Picture 1 (tube, each protein chain N blue to C red):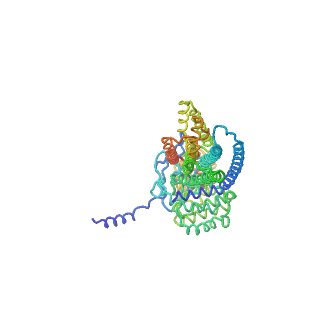
Picture 2 (tube, rainbow over the protein chains, first blue to last red; picture 1 turned 120 degrees about the horizontal axis):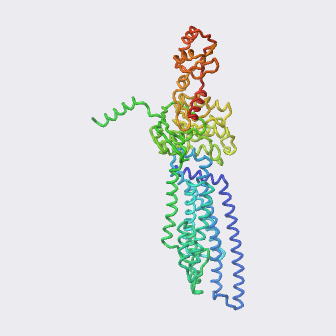
Picture 3 (tube, each protein chain N blue to C red; picture 1 turned 180 degrees about the vertical axis):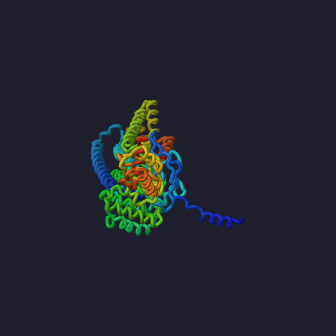
Length: 299
Length: 322
């Protein structure tokens, strides 16, 4: 019951601080930009490919028009969703960083925690509300992008629910880790640490990706995985991106050149089961640690 | 013996036992690293009492209060509020608290803040809708509940803090410097409020460095300095325990000091004026007769009423020097 009271209060805070308004305006702008860009690029490409085909010249790479268009829309959708996950990830980090320590610093939390409210309930209420807002954000944004791609190009991702599920998991990971930071670190220090961690995870993904480029570099691939264990956010996004790719795209790209180079911001392989387990346990572990640390903290 | 009989007996003995103290601490200790904020705080506040916790800034008053609210974990000793440890959320159900700097979520309106706290305190919808306007009226914020706390003046925020503290009709109210931001009229209102609470049987624990405030409303005080209680007791006892007589003579010599020392303790000699600490003012008439018969000319024999401030300065000064 208290958890819900705190959650409701947190949503009110987001509204009052114009966070919701700003989020909605920026999201609408982002989705509109994507829709216009996608439609224009897609139709221009379609026209030029069709005209090339009409003149009887074979397209480069041995792909037919349909495959070529599918590849283009796949890349556009992946880039669009990459943008969504990046924004959602930053939002998750910022919300987490701003969740507890500013309230301690300002002293506003003293009166609240002097009520018959446990620290566990307080943290759970905060997490629940912020996680709910972020889930709505990811669903609306990625949903709008996918609907646009489907309407314009008839695009069908491999598995929509896994895409969204993993993107939401990624945001939960970032929210939970920054909330943990918020219970033990001052606000600014936490912000710096979280951004550094986030950057590191991204770099880990890139290193891992380079490690998979044929002929392959096992050391780099392992290094990428090791960094991902520290913060599995980018690894989960790569897992999500795999399910964005339509099955036909995967088939086409794997037998075109005989070797798969993939996309730098996405993955042509699903997330490893062990990494998925780690990614699911990660936010739970962060929240558990956050509660333990917050219980011991003097205000 | 049947179970009902033993239960009845228990009830009977419970009736004769002294009531559970509102606050009971024993050997409370709090250190932040090497800095000790609270040394060895042992005190009991019975229900219904207005207790003043008095000390200079940094004496450990706020730390003690935060321990009583479960906001700070003691490094030693124990604190009980109505017999329960304040770390349990349920123990805080009966406490109302006005924090030191009365900082609240500034983005909210006064009414929203009261509603949030009302929900946390377990008040139902109906209770909240009745109680909130009533309290805003009582603390002098009628008609201002819809404004954001950010726009409130310091005094208004403190009034809002008082409303928050009293929201759920607590049995114990902890006030940390409740009048620091108020003007003289506001201060008087708070004094009235504390008296009203006391009349209603509410226990009040008041942190203050303002002696007049404590003097005006408290039944009992404890004076703390550098994390220790240096004096405590009913206000009258505390002021009375160190009654002084100021003796004005024509001359001060060794004989007169010896004579005075037999009737009290010489605290100060300033020229021909001697300040004598006595147990009771009843020694004054005899002392006058004695001095005159010993050949001294007595110009004055004045009882010095020591204010709480004098006691405070003496005690706190002693600790600082020591």
